[in-house]
Each structure stands twice: as C-alpha cells, then as structure tokens.
Length: 215
Image (cartoon, rainbow, N blue to C red):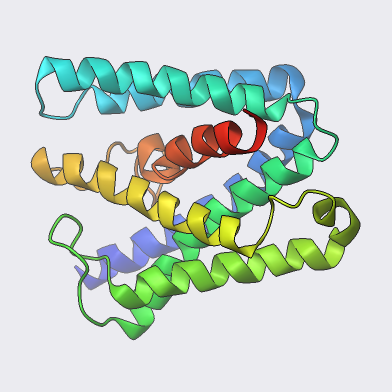
C-alpha cells in the first residue's frame, strides 16, 4: 500500500512536470493548438461526467453546462481586451496554485475536515490554497505591474474569490464521485486521474470570470 502511494505521487509529479509547460505553451500559441486541446478536454469531460451514477436529467444538464463552460473559455482566450492573454494566464495559474496549495498544506498540516463529501479536504488546505494563489498573484503583479494595474477588476479580492470558487468546483465534482463510489473520474492522466479531476475548478472559474470581466 505504501509502495503504491509512493508510485502514485511519483507519477503525479512526472505528469505535472510534463503537463504544465505544455498547457501554458498551448494557451500562448492559441489557434488550432488551443482549439484542439479544448475539444479533447471537452470530449473526455463529457465522457467522464456521463459515468456518474445520477439521474438522466442531471447528466443531461451537466453536459449542457460543460459545453457552455468550454465555449466561454474559448471566448475568453480570444477576447479583444489588450491584457486578455495575461489575465487568462493569471486565472489558469490561480486555479493550479489553488489545487497545489490545498494539496500541500492539507497533507502537511492536516487539521479538521471541511466536509464528508471530500474527506481529504481540510481547513488548513482551504486556507493554504488561498495563500498560494495570492502569492502567485503577487508574482504576476511583480513581473506585469503595468499591465495588471490598468485593469482595476484584477485585484487580490478577485483572486481570493477565484480560489474559493475553484475549491467549490472541486467539491462539486467530489460530491458526484462519492455518490458514484469512485475515487477518480478517469485514468487518462497518471497520478492525477481523469480530465475532470484536474479541471473541476476551472469549469466554474472561467465562465464566471468571463461574465464578470467582459459582460
């Protein structure tokens, strides 16, 4: 059992090292690379969502929402705002750092559980996720101060809300996983699980961010 956990963490680390630079390159490249990447993620997200043990109405509306979420993510990437790409990178980084911060702080400091829906989620992990996302925001602010300061909506309170929303998305998917008695939504990403396991926060963060910032 201990050996399996070690292998799983090793696979998780290797996958992250390979995936993160690749994803950021795809976002930066845009065009056919980004569009194809979105379509692949949408395909596997729908496939994984359809596996949940729930009534057909929930599955149907879930699939409709996934189309809606990915469409607004696409619109976000190609918005005409001059700082749009930087903001897209910032939001992506906040979601990723929220996931990493929650995992590291939760595993290291442990503490009381938040909910039975996801037994591994702790209050220390919740706060750690927010703290790391704030740290990432200040890194962006340090390197891109002029660009971010022109957009008054991009501030620390916005980032905190994004981190909280990302964690709510995580709990939302965790609820359906627990209800379906499965640990991961899939096995496509070694050490991480399925696509929905990795983008559970983003499918809520990006559409709401787009609506808030641009509509």
